[in-house]
Structure formats: structure tokens, C-alpha cells
Image (cartoon, rainbow, N blue to C red):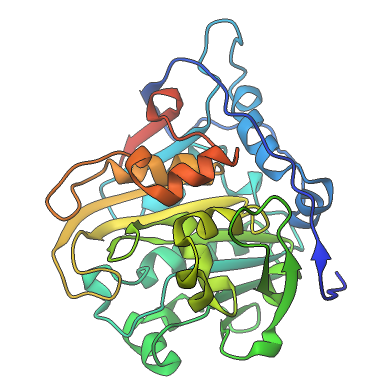
Length: 340
């Protein structure tokens, strides 16, 4: 994909669907049909979000007259070594998102040189599980990328993220510390953010999988999937000089992961984003293709700063919902929860 300055994408907003929510406890044998779209096709066709909101109905053959039509989430709890595959299997398996020969970009949060166990960074174990699933699906190349806030060498070392590079011939760890690693992209429909320099690694890959950690944040309350996308732009500091919450939502208009997988094996519920703070062990992973739904559901997993609240109480999640980027109402989601 040739990258030129002022590249203009034209994503198609989607209207959240209505319906009754439910939580299901299911086995790992549920599978659905392949959607067969590459990341480039998502971008060019502008159908990424619209498709994400539509496929759950197709996936499970739901009766449109009686079944909820909201986005499907895979939630796994228990053995942390099995959480990722179990959660993704509830969505039909990794083959629904990664095809043979594709280049897949993974975006964990390794922004801080923090103790890996405190939850400020995505755990290497979760990233490794995703890498192995992508390779098993036939991915030709897997790039693990982040634009770290603190010293990149210390961030890599203390996160232990190098352990996720299981096959050096196919898997690379790339820190995005040079401006030349980015291309300027217009953000049509952005209300606060009109343009951003986005990592070329993402623009040139077939698929993007977002791998945030569940943690608190001093400026935004919580930092989950949508917030994690800030680590894919060059001038993230500029977003703090405008309406930060709206800018985060605007960024999601042009950076569209095919899948968001939240590492909630442990959650940093205070002291975020860099820690230290209070860390709660949840041994949970939440996965879904609707970025708003994933974030909104994850907010309810635990208390933050000693208080419980919903996705609607997080300004950037609410702003993304208002842009039509996904479902914020947990009652309208189909949650497939499995204990392993």
C-alpha cells in the first residue's frame, strides 16, 4: 500500500443496533463462517465498523426477530495460559480474523518501564498467545509495535515483551521512536482531531489487533482499547492540548483493529497509567471486534479508584459511541463467557 501525505480514508459510520442483551456460558466448539476481508479491504471499502456490528447476527445464525443483534464478546476467565484462545474461539476462532500469508500488526501497551506484574503494560504471556495463534493461522509476518512514552529499551526490558517473539524469522518487535516511521493521515469526521501521523507499520499491514492492558489513567479515568491506539501516532502529546476524550474517539475513525483483546489478567485500578498503584488479579481476557463494546464491557469488570462505573461514564468511550463506532450499552451485547 503506497502511503502518501494527506491520505484520506472514508470509513462508514455505523448505527448501533437495538435488542435485548444476554450473557451466555458456552463451550469452545462454537464456530462461525469466515468474513474473508483483509485490513486493506476494510479501509478501502470503509466497512470495518459496519461489518463488525453486523457479523454477530450472521455468525451464530440468530433469528433476527427474537435474538439480540448487538456485538458479540468473548470473555475467558481462569487459567491465564488459555485465556486468549478461549476468548477468541467464542468469536469463531482466530481464522475469522487472520488469513494465510497476511502481515499482522499487534499493538500491546508497553509505554512504561514498569514492573510487568503491576498491570501498567500488556503481559508478555498474553501477547505471546496472540502471536502463536496468528502464526498457526498462517500469518506470514507478525509485527509487535508500540510508541513508548518512557525509554524504549527500558520499556522493552521491564515488560518482558521480547518473550513474545517466538519465531525471529516471522515475528519482529518494533519500537516506533522515529518520525519517519509515520505517515500523515486525514481524519474525516473528526471533531477535535483532523489529522494525525499514523504508524506506517499499521497502514502497510493487512490486519491490526489491539492488545491493551486494563488500567486506570489519571487523565481519562481508564485506559483500554481505544486509548491504547494513541501509541500508534507520532505526536500523542498534541492530543492533550485539545479535547483529549474527543480526540481519542476521532482517532478510532481511521485506526480500526479487526480485533481488540484486553489483557485483564490483572488490572491496575489506581496509579495509572504508569503505576505503581493498586493491582487486582482478575485472570480475565475480553475479546471482540467492536472496540466500543469491548471497552464499555471491560469497565464493569472491577472498581476503579475504589468506585464502580459504566462505559457511559468514560468520556472517550461515550464520544466514540456518539461517532457511531460501536455499542456502549452492555445490555445490548451478546457476551459469551467461558471458564477455563
